[in-house]
Length: 112
Length: 114
Image: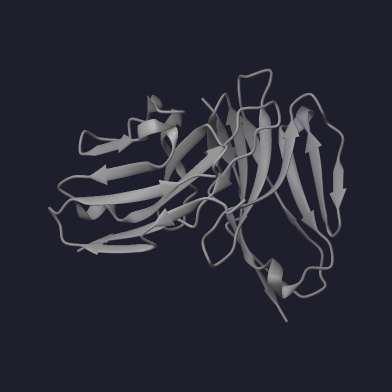
């Protein structure tokens, strides 16, 4: 069975601070996919990134970066120079076949 | 690309009533999913369609729940004899089968059972 653990329930930072959201996953699959989704107060889940289990290259997209480490089963997400608009719930997700398994999410509040 | 749309956005009903939600996926997407999200939790898988075929139903989907996707286009999720425990956000997502498959989610239908 798939499991995704996001140990941080809530994080509060001041604008321009860097913040890292932790994610640890469990899977028996040799091929799997990891995602991060953002859920702003409007409720719609917004795709941020997808990584394959066979590609451990870290990725940077603007202020966002992701650190994927198979050795520790972690897929952490860092926002650099946070902004108020980054305030949302962030979900780490594992996909096996067609089914997504979500973590419980981390509520990020960025204060001005 | 108009995105995944869900209707209604909000539904308030009395316990015991039946409700039906609709999801219109992105037009070229052959896969459609229903998820349920309760407060403070991540979405949980309910069911999945490939074209018009319903390929899997979660154990969360009791016999009061039924989903259809006639003609492989829009989908409906019906809940019969609603209970207060059914109160949740019901999310629909769609995708196109590919090695880089990515799910696009709708804004959800918030159900409140009084």
